[in-house]
Each structure stands twice: as structure tokens, then as C-alpha cells.
Length: 367
Ligand SMILES: *Cc1c(COP(=O)(O)O)cnc(C)c1O
Image (tube, rainbow, N blue to C red; front, side, top):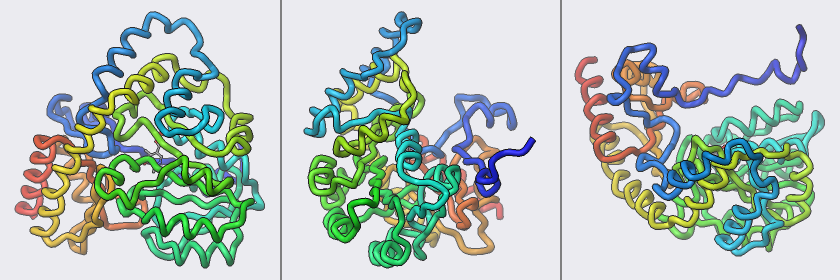
């Protein structure tokens, strides 16, 4: 069978390996496996969100509230925007997809950093759009401006902070850049790790309300998958002026979130104490990862997220390291598919991180 030729250039997205795979392939008991690969919250979801999932299980036969009234209202109060300035998706991944479908086609150009979230490219290529990347791996606004002026893209993706590298643009500099972009260019600010950035350095915080007040062509994306610990429930959202939201809503399939997801997100948002605890754990664990890199002589990007990226020099090889750790029940993310000799490690609990350092030491000793 033949398929759309746009699929020819798409590489299937390689998600963080699931725990079940390590159980199957290496026969390691599930409780001995540590997954530090998908930037999940090691403290789990708020207990109140878990309780809401259980409480709502008896409504599994009913379709969810398709207007998502309660969650939109809660998000609108949290961010001090209007409910009709919010769209909710099955993960913010789905909102990325809507943005591209609403704005791009095979004649379009889409601008992004050289090394950034892989799904931007997948959805861009699916509509046949041309992907333009800046020269530097990390976000560099001077390069973005030059590329913007040269190519006049339909969409610009800024991942703030950036996955998988961990760097974070300054919010004032970002706003200065956005002022130079034409109003017909859609600017997507992916804030999947904004909670972590804001906790570390307030000058990195992007306020969605301020953003959309100044820029009618910008959309802010948030997710419940990272700091909120609900990756398994698939909830993300976009915040923009009504014109953008109304365009995206045309592409939204009905009932794109489950009753359980909506209930969980609502409780998770209320439980800010749990978020603070999660952000504190992250801030406390980060120095040991930086210290380990310094001690071993690896380069790393100072991170504004809940992960850190280590870069290696030959003969150290990220694929070999990732395989070694995987076979011993430690799942981390190899960045070889990004063309980097690097790994990305999600910060876990103190115990999980200790296990990572021990196994890595062991690898270095055995070489
Ligand atoms: C995890 C992530 C997302 C979206 O995750 P969802 O689970 O689909 O909400 C979006 N952007 C970046 C950069 C991410 O790391």
C-alpha cells in the first residue's frame, strides 16, 4: 500500500522506554527498576488527584463533560484569563498538533531550535511543511530573528525551558524578540517545564496572561504531565486570545479527554502544596547531578527543568552507557537520535538518584 509521501521523512517518535519492557527483556523485577527517562514527577501525582480518579471510576460509562467547564474555570482562575481563552487537549502534544493543522500546509515553513522537542517536527512534516532550524543546539534569539527575517515562517516554536537540553530563555528577552515578529506568524511558547524554571529563577517565568495580552499571535502551552505528575492521564492546555482558541477548537475531536483525566487535573491544580514539594525535591536533587558531572569531567547544561543533560566525549558513548544502565534496570534517555553523544536523566527521588550514580560509577570502573 502507498501512503502520503509526507510520511517518508518522519521518524517514528521514540518515547522513554516503559518499565514493562525492562521486565520482559531483562527479567528484572518491576520493583527494582528505576525510570528516569520521561521527566515524570518522582513523587507521583497529588494524593487528592488519585482519590478523584478512584471516585470517578463509577462514571466510566458516561461521556465526559465535553465543554470541560470545571477544569477550564479552574485554569482560568489560576492564570487569571478567561475560560474562552483556554483549550484543553489530550496532553499538550495534541495542542501542538492543532496549532500546526490550523496554520500550516505543504507551502509553510516552521521555525524551531536545532535541538528541541521532537513532536514539533513530526506534526510539521505530517502536513508537508518545511522545518527550519536555527544553527545552535540551544535556543538563541539572535539566530531566531535572523531565520525569521530570512524565511518568514508561519509558525515559531519556542520551548521555554527546552526539552531535551534544559536551557531556558529569559522572559524579557523573549518578549523583545516577539515584538519583532509579524502578527500573522503563530508563536507557540511551550511551557511544559515552566513550573521548574519559575521555581529556580523568576526571570525565566512566562506569565500566560501577560503574554497573550501583548501578543494576539501567541499561544502558551502547559501540561499536567510533568510537575503535576499526571503523565498517564494525558492532560495539556493552550492559552491564547479567543481568535486562536476558536480556530483550534474546530480541530478538536469531541470528548478528547476522559472523565478521570478531567477530575484528576482539577484536584491536582488545587493541590499546590504537592507541587511545591515536588519543585523543592527537584531543586534539592539538582546539585548532586551537577557535582557528579563536574567530578567525572562531563559537560552538562545548567538545567531549568526536572532533568539534566550530560554530554560525553569519545571514547565514552551515550548508546553504550544507556544500554549498560538499561540492562541493570536504570532507564534514562539516550540522545543519540538527536545526533548528540549525550544522555538526559530525569531527576528522581534521592534513593533513585543514588542508584543512578552508583551504576554509572560502576560502568566507569568496569571500562
Ligand atoms: C512532555 C512535553 C510536552 C507534552 O506532554 P504531554 O504529556 O503531551 O502534555 C510538550 N512539550 C514538551 C517540551 C515536553 O517535554
